[in-house]
Amino acid sequence: MSHKGERARAYILAHPDETKTQQAIGAGVSEATIALIRRELVERGLLPADRKARVVNGVSPVAPPAVPLPSPQPPPGMLDHTAMQALADIASLEDLDDDEVQKRMLKQCIRFAFDPQLHADTRMSASVQWGKLRDAVKAKDLGPGPR
Image (tube, rainbow, N blue to C red):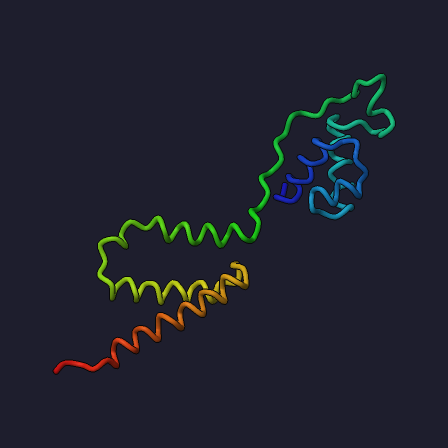
């Protein structure tokens, strides 16, 4: 079964009293997918055939097994945080000289600026920072020079 199918199956079993439309929205799949999976669950005896027979005198005729829902994707802002945290955790940066750190920061700014998974504000900040670092390198190279 595909990842979407497994997610839909888990959602249907966790929310058997919802309509197909509600289950489709909750699981992030189409209503047709929900209908196919519900039919399969009814055939396996994991879901009653008649929705009205689900709760009789406060007792469900078929108790769905406890299936954990798949973990949701992190919000887009967390990708930025994760990327920044990964940089902060690099221990090898402590042993580098300033020029090497500056070169690596330039490369990382370029990576962030062109990474479509990061937020647009993060990408723009990386682009601005890249420009500032590049200008600092040029200013250092164009300085008064040796006497």
